[in-house]
Length: 263
Image (cartoon, rainbow, N blue to C red; front, side):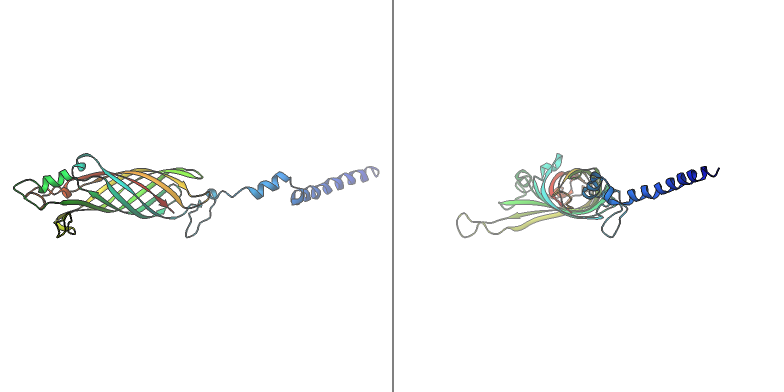
């Protein structure tokens, strides 16, 4: 029995001494593989999975606020084409993002439609309602709308979204005329001949695509197409023949195509 004690003691000592040796090898960064050290240095953090949140960012790392600026053209469709043609457009908007998928945009849009010559002639060029020559018309349409936005695709450099909403629309049509001046082949500055306006609620919906300016940049280009429907009432106005409905009082449908930048 006395001869076995040293052997048992030596096995216990040998086992216990191996534990700190193993622990020291795991805790020593110098013993990590080159591949593991390289991966830990070069791999960027995945901000979408973090719980970091502050005044400007959501928990998943997405930006909480957004700003947009854009412009393009709008195209009247259906019966609206009888008294409105192609328009230049402008947009300014700001938004709040609940996360990287859902948000809401508050937008101001302005459109400057022309009035077809046929519509002008039908209103002012037929007897017995005589009017000055050289009459031209413009339709100014602006709106303030609240539009929820759903980003159904979020890539590293590109994305796609759906937008739908509605709000307040104001439509103003102005007819100007010019009279000959003293010089030959000259016309005077435009003078207001007639105008009417209409306020109404409306709806809009569309599809858009985004592309980042550079990798990791918050700024994005966006291209978007929407459809707009405005419930202008059908009351009569003073434009044209007495009792003839003013073009502002017809329901309005058009498609704006917009290019711009969103931050």
